[in-house]
Length: 122
Image 1: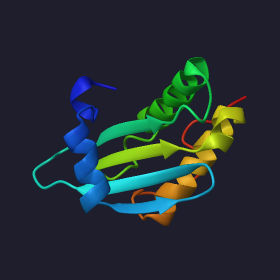
Image 2 (image 1 turned 45 degrees about the vertical axis):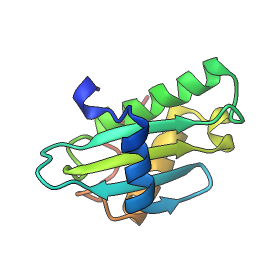
Image 3 (image 1 turned 90 degrees about the horizontal axis):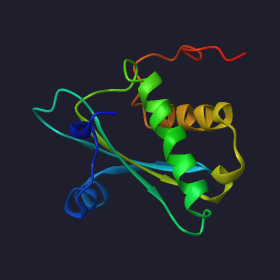
Image 4 (image 1 turned 180 degrees about the vertical axis):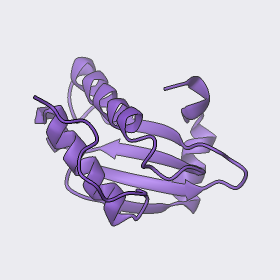
């Protein structure tokens, strides 16, 4: 992910939390905020210390970034997204993370296509 596609500042996170819409399942909470004049989406990731140690939290963030990289064409642009990972994600493999994030995006109606997984895993 490029730097301009990331949400880093606390004010930006707060704006998405306050003004955005949220959708959740057991593994993730997804906040989304429509941004006028923004041609691509930006993401912010939040993984609490309660989820696991630093290694676990960084692994989860890598998996979520991978999802956004693979599905960048299907995810609606012009939005700021904040993904909050919950405790069960610590024990999940990528396929489970992908399925769970797809579920949240479909629930929020923020995915363009409803096709199956873009990249098949062996």
